[in-house]
Amino acid sequence: MQNPALPKNTYLRPACRRSGRFLAAARFIVACALAGNMLTGNAALGQTFDKLSFATNWVAEAEHGGFYQALADGTYRRYGLDVTIVPGGPQVNNRLLLPVGKIDFYLSANTLQSFDAVEQNIPTIAVASMFQKDPQVLIAHPDRGINDLKDLKNLVLYISKEGMASYFQWLKADYGLADTQVRPYTFNPQPFLADRNSVMQGYVTSEPYAIEKQTRVRPKIFLIADYGFSSYSTLIETRRDLVEGRPDLVQRFVDASVEGWYGYLYGDPAPANALIKKDNAEQTDALLAFGRDKMKEYGIVDSGDAKTLGIGAMTEQRWNDFFTQMSAQGVYPATMDWKHAYTLQFVNKKVGMKN
Image 1 (tube, rainbow, N blue to C red):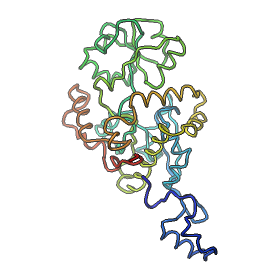
Image 2 (image 1 turned 135 degrees about the vertical axis):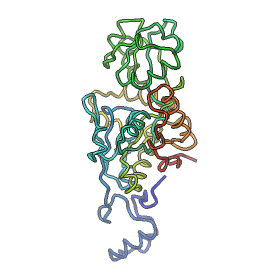
Image 3 (image 1 turned 90 degrees about the horizontal axis):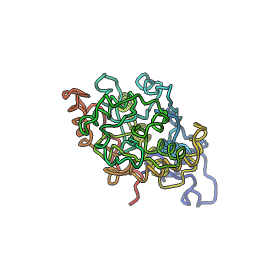
Image 4 (image 1 turned 180 degrees about the vertical axis):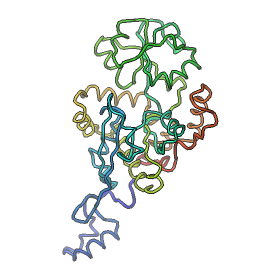
């Protein structure tokens, strides 16, 4: 959906050039503006852009493709935005920069971080969820008789500290896994590869590719979202003061990002991939293609409510269900005001959807 105040046109419509002569500059601008023909991005007509920074939670990768697409193909600028993407990484905590005003938007990993903000009284809020499914997977060796999460009870589990505090609490409650099974996951697959009676965490878009490339064997993967872990993922967070003081800016950033995701998944991803590789030299065309394909195969971005409400969709019911799930396992107090973690003001508008 195009921002009515920021038309998509990058050319003059016939109505504004039919006379065959130049109008005075002031009359020309007024006439075209009244006709809905103000040219977005044309400095000659005085177009200005709102500068903003958007920080991610990891190094540039396919999971950020829609944002890079909106930057690369000019969608952000069409919405009047001059966006800088600030990549994260293993030694970078960009989330700390949001509440102190060093960045304007942040890419949050999952719903849990939004609940943490409420619990710790941090003035941030989720305004959209680009992923309907958390891409977190558990990866097992093939041909070991492991066909369900219930089959993991007697195996060694390589889980990160963050995983232990979040989805593993759900695994313990729903699938009977135990803390004694867990070994620290250090983002290195070698311990898993050396022990065929082990399982490791990963993202459906990346770790399975690395393992298959190294072993020439496709691992067994379990997308925990398909087993009942209902967290949103890849959420756009911002500060409450920005939502209250500049809702137009927030709306434009959300809408442009949504359009970017449609473009990345169903258009030509080459512009975004070029920028991703520029920010992260370790990315290859093959890995980026794998990540994009898996997002489409598993419905990471546009399944569930996004099918009818558009990419970025969120619902109160889904937030409530996940909070109930987590509070029942003692992750959060049942009395916490979970509705303070998000707003539906900027989503569910079917932006970018084809009729």
